[in-house]
Structures are given as C-alpha cells and as structure tokens.
Length: 253
Ligand code: NDP
Ligand code: 8X3
Image (cartoon, rainbow, N blue to C red; front, side):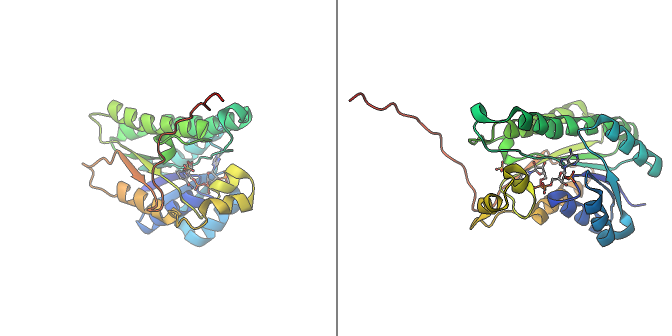
C-alpha cells in the first residue's frame, strides 16, 4: 500500500515540486491549494497518484471538509507537508499594511496550525506519521522588511520543536525545513506584485530551486523510522549573513 501525503500549496513552486518528488518516491499525494485549474494541470502530469483538493487554509470549514474527505478516501495520513504560505511586502514595520500582516498570520500561522490540529490526533492514534513544515531562514535571521513574515516563520520553527516535546513517547515525527533564497516560484511575485521587481530578487544569484526543497523534503521523509530530522536550514552558496548595523549620530557642527 502506498503512503498517503497531504501537500498544501501544491498548485505552484515548492508544493508542486514536492508533490512530483513524493509521487516518484511511491507516495499517493493529495495536493491542496485554492486554484483548481493549476491542480488539475498537475494531475494531468502526475496521473492517478495525485488527487487535487481545493482548500483555502485560511478557511476553517474548508480544512474540516478537506480533512474529512481525506479520512473517507484513505485509511490515514502518513505525511503532512505544511507548505502553503506567503510573504506580502517588504516595507519597514512602521509603513507596512496591517491587512498584509493579517493575511500572512492567517495563512502561515493559523492555517498551518489548524492543519496540525486536524491531523495530529489520527497520527498519534495510529502511532505513525510525519509532519514536515516549511519554515524559512527568515524565521531565524532578521532582515529589514522581514518583520511579520519572519515572525510567522519563527512561529513555525518553535511550533515544530514544541510538537516534538509533546510527541515524546510516540513514533510521530516533526521536521522543519528552513530555506533561504529560492527562485523559480511565485513567492516574490506574490510578495512584490510586480514581475520585474520579482525577477530582480534573483538576478545573478544562482538561488535554490524548488527541486532542491523537494529533495530536502524527500530526504527528511525517507529516513529510517527511528530518525527524526528536527530542522534543515539550506541556502544558496551565494547567500550569507548580514552583519549587525550601527546607526551613528551625526557629530554636532
Ligand atoms: P509560491 O507562491 O510559488 O507557492 C505558494 C503556494 O501556497 C501556492 O501553491 C498557493 O496556491 C498556496 N497558498 C497560498 N495561500 C494559500 C491559502 N490561503 N490556502 C491554500 N494554499 C495557499 O511560493 P513558494 O513555493 O516559493 O513557497 C512555498 C512555501 O515556502 C511558503 O510557505 C514560503 O513562505 C516558503 N518559503 C519560500 C522561499 C522562497 O524563497 N521561495 C524560501 C523559504 C520559505 P494558491 O494560490 O493556488 O492557493
Ligand atoms: C523566503 C526567504 O529571505 O525572502 O522565506 O525571507 S526570504
């Protein structure tokens, strides 16, 4: 029997690449997102092992309905890849849009948390399962304009570790994948709302690709059952850390 995975945000970027890779590893994948047409295109490529599911993770009723459908169709979920997420804007906090902040929290924090809450009891009951969250280097390394986006990913990071503390004594695994700059997805277009500005983010940078993230997910998911990979942080070689900054007062004339 093939293992069952739910991958959120499967209509683009990492989620589509993760779905492809998990199917290549022998999984049956339920790929969730809001855009059905994109999921259907992926289904045409991946065939019967891919099941599209329209589910907006900011909608509690949609999560209940989606998870209910999965329980009816399959014996149980072996893997949840909590990938759906977004960044909106790069404005400094004092100029940022409250609506953007609330949408990031609704998706990256509340949506992800609701899915954990929905699948965890079944996994514990079966004493088997794995939750792989997609965090970010932004959850550990602050940068200007990262304000609430980075804070949502810090939440994902700490939730992943705290889940492990609660799951002690069970065989249920939790991992957090924390990528840095990754191109070839819709992430920067969604964040900046402009194709030229989005393309400029990756210019000359040789960023990570969605396949690199899918590779990390597949590796984490296929370790022996005794092994829990707590976190994987990955960056392109071209990316490194910014130093601490000091703003110096202008000397009096
Ligand atoms: P994309 O924008 O390419 O994909 C995001 C996916 O999330 C889409 O499939 C989108 O589908 C889905 N999504 C967004 N909002 C919702 C929602 N409310 N309900 C359901 N699905 C939703 O981005 P990436 O693939 O680059 O990013 C995927 C994850 O990786 C995100 O969590 C992001 O924060 C994280 N990340 C990205 C990095 C990067 O540099 N690209 C680096 C580190 C982390 P639809 O619109 O159809 O609903
Ligand atoms: C995406 C990586 O550096 O744009 O999570 O925040 S970054």
